[in-house]
Structure formats: C-alpha cells, structure tokens
Image 1: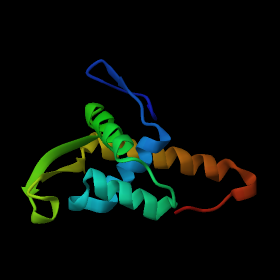
Image 2: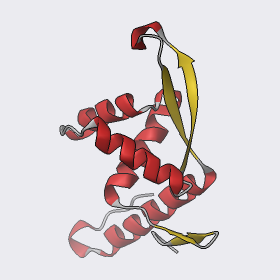
Image 3: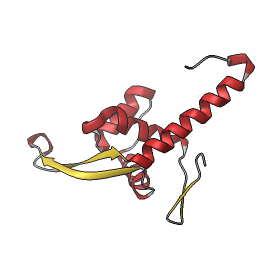
Image 4: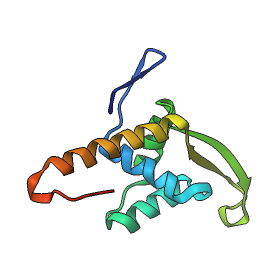
Length: 118
C-alpha cells in the first residue's frame, strides 16, 4: 500500500518532492502557507524553489487528500491579503508514516549503513 493508495477509486501517489513539502507543512504547523513553505525548503535544503512550484505541489497534495487548506485572516504585512494555510490530513499523516517505515526498513537491510533507528 506504500506510495500507491487507492481512495474512492482515485489512485494517489506520493513523490519525493511531495513528501518533503508534506513534511514541511507539518513542521511549520499553523504557519504553513506557500511562501513560508518555500522559505523553509530553502532553509532546510539550501536550494530555492519557485512559488509556482510550491503552489502546484500544494494543490496536488490537496487534491490527493493529503492536505487541506483554509483561508487565514488578512494581514497588514501582506497588504490586506489573506494567506491560504495548509494542514496535513489523517490520510497525509498515514502516508508519511508508511513512507518513513518503508525507508527505515530499507536502511536497516543495507549492510553498509545498518543502523538502529529506534
């Protein structure tokens, strides 16, 4: 079932970049909106991503049911515009857990890097 969930007859997959964005939404909590996610990606990886790539990935994750969003309050710092705040759904958390468990299992099987991750 890892990376290939079927929900309501819609096949959903989680790519590596999508997994990172999903994790960043969880890390940022209530501050998870497109710009902050792009900035955190840069802070964590040292690489920049376009706001467009961030938006399209967030939309894709929401369509797959891994995220949900709601509009936040307007802020003066954004010229009175509202932020679209993202949160991870129960399905998104389950997919992340399955991804982590699968990868840990693989790392534990690789002799050169065999480490106890518990």
